[in-house]
Amino acid sequence: MVESFLQYLHSEKRFSDHTVLAYGNDLYQFSSYLEDQYDIENLDNVNDKIVRSWMVQLSDLGLSARSINRKLSTLKSFYRFAKKNGFNNRNPLENVIGPKQEQRLPEFVEEKEMKNLFSEIKFDSTFKGLRDKLILDLFYQTGMRLSELIGIKINDIQFSQKLLKVLGKRNKERLIPLHDGMLKEIEDYNFKRLEIVGDGEDALILNNKGIKCNEKFVYRTVNSYLSNVTLTTKKSPHIIRHTFATHMLNRGADLNTIKEILGHANLAATQVYTHNSIDKLKSIYKQAHPKG
Image 1 (cartoon, rainbow, N blue to C red):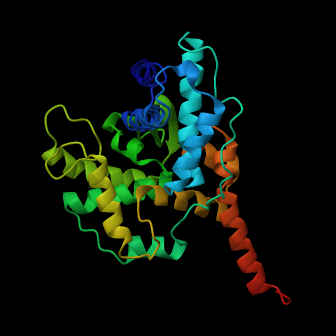
Image 2 (image 1 turned 30 degrees about the vertical axis):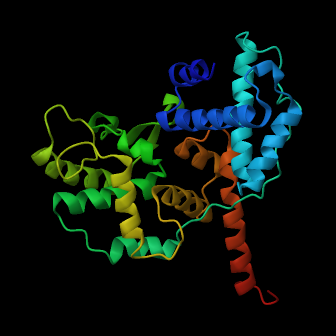
């Protein structure tokens, strides 16, 4: 049943391999708990009390409310699928409410630190120098995800329209505007890229061997450069995504525009960045107002 569900997520829902693996880990963990604690193998024998006892165990193991809720979300999806396909008569998660979790504000890099990244660090005109700068600039100027950057192909760049096509979550395409400076940067990099690219390789971002980069390579590259300019705890491509959204809001961009550029499914996912902007407003108000 689990295998059928995971195949459904992969083939029909088009979830990434990483997401499908996470769902599978959650379900096998729950399955082991049922067998160890209740000697249960039949789905119909699971009830809401058993699910809640699993939640208690997860909490005792030190998992955060956020992690527990994610696992509950996996179970809810699984049992809906099971019921719909006749594997189970009821959904034991219908009356289960997850633990309340504190809203975590996204971390971001200060604007002056991002300026230092591109002004104080010298990127030479070699393939590596141009590529590394392009990686950082694409993240900061578009807010794209790591998987989206790796998936960019040369033909996804529409130079005449000044647009970049990216493939987001669930294979949803979107267009991101590019300014002239960004397009020139891509052209300069591609000139060097063509000198090392392998036959049939159409990925934009390549490693030093002319092969499409993997996620670890890009993550290490971003982490290395950010370590030179910021003390922010997390130094990842996703932090630059948060930074892009926060800086756009601070400079007056509206939420719907940022939502479309980031590729969020709904506005609620974008609204989290307003908290950082409000904090910025409070800080400015306190400094500027006579009675602040």
